[in-house]
Amino acid sequence: MTPVIAQAAPLSYARRMRQPPSAPALAALLREQHELEGRICARDLTMEDTLAAGRLLLAFAEREGDAFAALAPLLDPVAQAELSAEHRQIAEDLALLEWLLAADRDAADAAVLSASLASRMRHHVARDGRLLSRAAILARG
Image 1 (cartoon, rainbow, N blue to C red):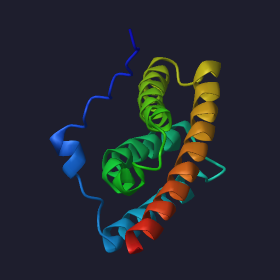
Image 2 (tube, rainbow, N blue to C red):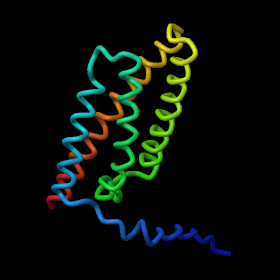
Image 3 (cartoon, helix red, strand yellow):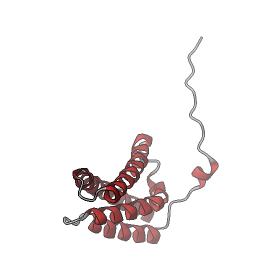
């Protein structure tokens, strides 16, 4: 018997038909990303600032998926899954930080979580910026 390699399931119709945004739309998204990066990279973030910046990052993440459509053929599916997993982890950590602040604002855990979260968000938003820049270049042709 000859072994047969199974063919991957076809992409859903909606995913195949999703078009990347226009170059001007990508440019606007990239400007928004730079503003977000500036806010997250501020060195004197309070815990409340971290919460607010994290909420903005998650709102931005809702829109970045379409922007990355231009890069979809170039991005490894594992890398795409990692981006989504990071968004989920940031959302969970933001919820935990919010709870810690409500329970005991002076808890050492809140300060440590806030600093860790701010650092991870800085790395995440910087990578998003590189990906968006690449998508904008591809959209221009």
